[in-house]
Image 1 (cartoon, each protein chain N blue to C red):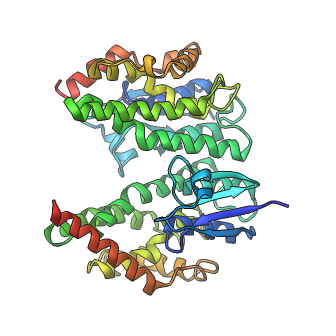
Image 2 (image 1 turned 135 degrees about the horizontal axis):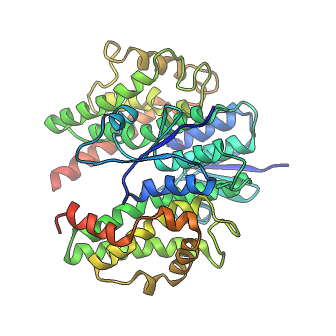
Length: 215
Length: 223
């Protein structure tokens, strides 16, 4: 029986992109359904009644929610190709720890940059750069976060890269100037076809934010 | 021989998850009790990013964040598994653990730290979240099914600490008639082997959380 895979998503969502990226890494064919978050589809409300959010992966009719939980699910189901998490438990713990760190900190700091001005925005920018610098430290001189191979933690962070242009424009600053090694890593990731085809166009992200926040 | 150390406090519900997991898997370990007002240099060395407990140190390498630690324990000591084998069931367990942390705990904590009309509104929100847990327990003894699993451990604070919060903040959240399954789960979990031997002293918890609540309310008045 062929697998039926459906993804409920939003083009500009960095969380949705993580799932697209994981599916692309594994070469999984799926049906993409774009949601309009102002008028959520019946399917979304039925498949994610608790949070009513995207992304939702529907595999043979059963929903999986929360982007990093979905990515782990994808890794466990399609385990014969392109493993996303390393095999060593300690390395896996490191990947999960830093992915959790990103989820706890990065979005909110970025949101401050987009939605505030003056001192508050400056504080947001400072916080944002501090978080990226910590991550840059974790990367060190490795090509990818867990070493030689692209994986879970790269997936968790690289999707935010598509939002950097918007953050830089709205915050009037250069992320590359502050975190050159991280941008180097991002460009390296973008050379992978799975990444370049899964990430949203940064200009479209910017346009989306302008509309969403009425800027 | 493997060397396992757990940095914790006597009262942290997050660290208690790790105690349960290690004991359920029969993993010997040493405990280092921390005073969070005076953190040890070892704690700061092993968890420089968050500087919090719990931290697990295994053969000199540290793992922080309770859910990350639970997954590490699960993958390192594979007997008495806490997660099911099926990927969909594993995703489900992880989902409820995350929901418990990000929605249930937060909403109950907000209700705990408020009073009057504000508390009433927080209670409404908290109960909305608890309803999802009630729904999830249908036909099951534990969130993990027949046996205690990852989600039970993640939500375990509901079986003891939550009662303390209710008492200290003079509120009722998990009433028997409104949440029969959750109420039953609380009793079963609290009384399960290993779990029941490791609850911190309730009277001490009441005193501690009373002080926390008073400080929160005072802070709010000051604003």
